[in-house]
Amino acid sequence: MRRAVHTSDVVASKLEIQPLQLKTLDEINVGICDGMTYTEIAQKFPSDFQERKINKLGYRYPRGESYLDLISRIEPVIFEIERSRQPVMIIAHQAILRCLYAYFHQNEIPEVPTLDIPLHCVIKLTPAAYFCDEKRVLIKPQTGEISIKEEYVQEFVRSKSKQKSFIDL
Image 1 (cartoon, rainbow, N blue to C red):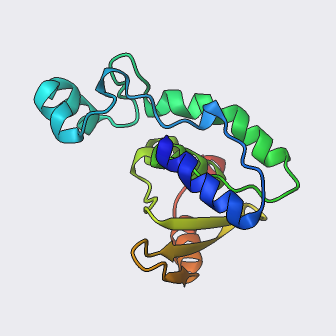
Image 2: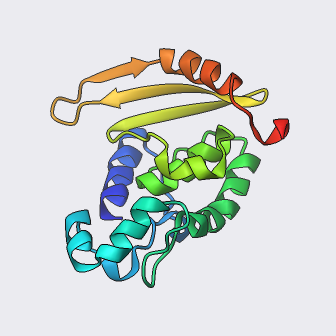
């Protein structure tokens, strides 16, 4: 959580805005595995490591959360974002961002844990009729060099139009 808070403080000072920290947007609670690397988890809790590998969506860390728990936790935030008439910037860890991204792009729930949310990237979603327009801004942390990937929007919209959504079922 410290990295997200630090990033939001830097961005907020550059944009001259007041950041709002919400406990609801804390990273996924990994319970007794907090502070451990995946290698350490695999060594200390091999059966848990395997179970998570098989079912990343439903796996709940011992004394922690699953992606399904996380989706339930952030639901009120999604409602607030939907009600907002002002732009909203969210700086969070990947699990939170995957859940939000999936909601706004109408992904199926089982897809959530595997969505590509790259590090050092700003993803701008602009609501449109029945989908969100998307622009990705990639930032090289070593140099600060920025590149914009707009073609991602067309690739995404084309690939999504071939898939079934909740509406089609």
